[in-house]
Figure 1 (cartoon, rainbow, N blue to C red):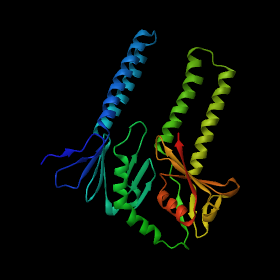
Figure 2 (cartoon, rainbow, N blue to C red; figure 1 turned 90 degrees about the vertical axis):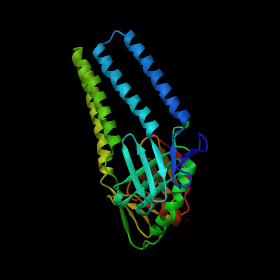
Figure 3 (spheres, helix red, strand yellow; figure 1 turned 135 degrees about the vertical axis):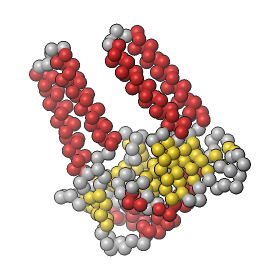
Length: 310
């Protein structure tokens, strides 16, 4: 028998006797994204045709913008999340990921983020509730149904661990988004402080100073992130500490607040704040981030402060 829809803001129930449910982007959001993409590309095309710059350069830029708009439009139309008795499946333009309920080993859940990880964290499903309807709907219903199936078993596993034994959590490596950011920053420096000055034959001391300053700045941030990727967090019976030399240590009872930095891109992070301005940053994509949040909130009574991460 054909499936039916409750309304535009509800999920789709597949089959009359089926327990499977499908969650998608709202139809109004899909239409708006398509309309705004076409309108923006049309305006950019008119501006480029009216300009006196290189036709080849404008064509390359416009082709890249068309590719990005096409990818976004298709991804929004094709993305869906399906729940059934066996597990959860996320389909998108980039592929299909499926996690069975029994194989989910960790979850991270906040008001705008739901992150599920499978065995050895080789499989992961990330769901995010964006602003202005830019998210799978109804997100709250989706999150509640997933947690109802996942939370009891995972929390029981976390609670069964011996609190007297130290547990080590490794920081994640540099992410793809971070690498893209470094490539963009490096390209900007090379184009504006090397290629353009050389083309105009104006490369001199001023450009060299800006070039050196830009390279040193990007290198400093890259080395900072590289050092972080080699750190570890150790959860002991007394508290949480960083394993690097001179690393911060915060007792469970001393944790004053946890600042939840929910992401615009990526997975976000948690900042654990203790006395004397001590702080430990925990990336959400770190293996064990959900378990660490469980330990912090069960062994202490911290305040939860929500914000955005740019």
